[in-house]
Length: 124
View (cartoon, rainbow, N blue to C red):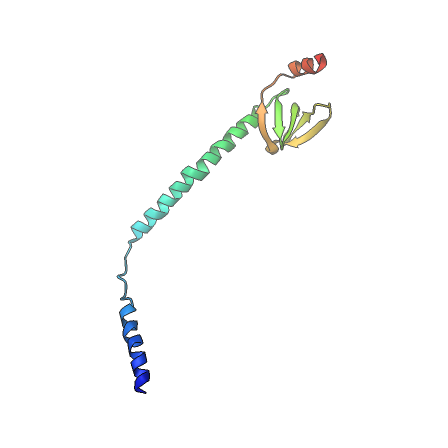
């Protein structure tokens, strides 16, 4: 029995040495919490939301300013604008076929002149 006490005594004594005292509770006021949340929201606004909003506005302006003869890229498809409808546009492909594409799918609008394209294709 004494041997068991001799073996367990160092273990019992070391357990009290390694026990952490109650860490002093750091009290944050509600104001500090709200400031951190406000900084995080400002960060997300400036880094993520605002640039995306500007990009969308620029694309919408491009889509609104489209006119007949412009070169349009939509989902990797390039064509010449033939007609603008309410929600879609009609594009003319190089081989003369026409396709209908949603306005929201348009990724690039390059101003062009249909007459110069026709003269280039007819002259070649």
